[in-house]
Length: 310
Picture 1: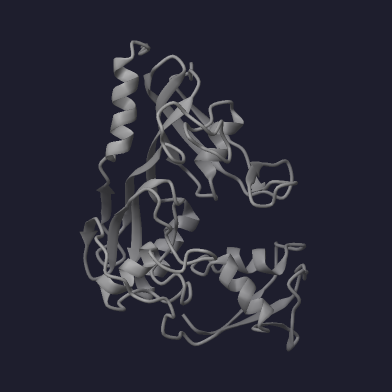
Picture 2: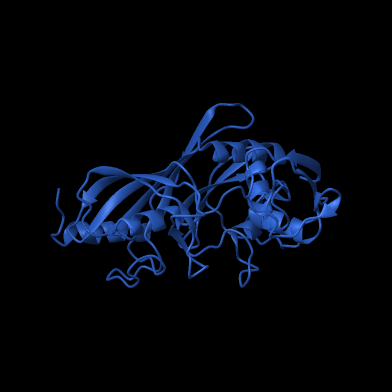
């Protein structure tokens, strides 16, 4: 979505300009806003602001998003597992190992490449040429359901629901350790790791509120099968939160114990249920992605090795 917009700073005094704009414009990704700032598209008193500028009470910030251009990412014919599709939305079941959108080292073979071919260009352009239609993501090694927006109206509607935390997102996971409580909630802010900036972490300062609700489905002694429901949607939220309370995800090489006896690559995590208010009808729409084969094989091994407990 292109055009000019302006915002007056009221209660956000001291926030970095990119974070301030990301909160005011949830339909636009923060990385894209950072690029707009770098290219001189964000003005204060008629002059471009620097990337490290912190807003002050009374500032009037002007933002000019560039005109949408044809995506440089090439469409690729691939087999996509479409769970639901209409003129506004598409729900797809992402397989393990697939990257959602092009990035450094992943120019082809991404979900976006496949969507460009499948949708013939009918994708929202709010998040720029590299992420058409994408309003949220799941990690490369996480499987499950994603919603894709086919037009800007749908994108704005779903983005607003994400901001309001009104979207239903339920995941299934296998974690290391025996979770004794039948259910619980992790309410801990998440931000960049203070030392390793490629990782996220529970932080005491500078993070965003993050809430994960979990409940135990089955116990297997050294492992536990859980359902996690997101109240918020921070980067790597389930992986960070479950690791922070001593129950890292099985196979998680970044936040967990890495290698596992099941030969699984990456975390055992599946986005099973996604529910949104439909941007066209206003009715609640919920889509479920079946648990993938690799996940079922892990559960079967756990159930038959004699370690299952109540």
